[in-house]
Length: 176
Image (tube, rainbow, N blue to C red):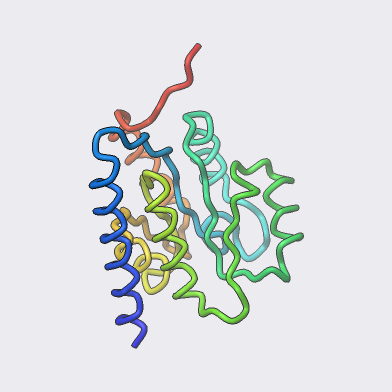
């Protein structure tokens, strides 16, 4: 049942993308670059301490004008603590947190958030610690996915840094 609903969301995205291409063609404004990031066990550990590798990659992307969007299973109840945590560690995009409504499953929330972001931005990747939630959401939205190993999350951030270096062409450098 969940797969059917997610497939319908993916189909709607495809139809909307086709419609946008038909309406705007070459005149469509370029999409801004974005990265979708899970919070728990991806950016921060269970000790509420950000991973150094995550801080480095996110700071670099921010300097290169890539918007960071956090898609989390956290609900509005944890909004203040989450925003305080992101602001305290100066994580870019601390105001771009997509919280899960209490009435929606995290899986559905993440699929819908990925779909919306993929429609509005040129998403370079999604990074998270569960293939069942973030990975599936990324695949349905047509976004590359980097899976974080919970036992060694820094390796995924290193892999993401390597992807950024390999795809240097899509990054917009700051003008001097």
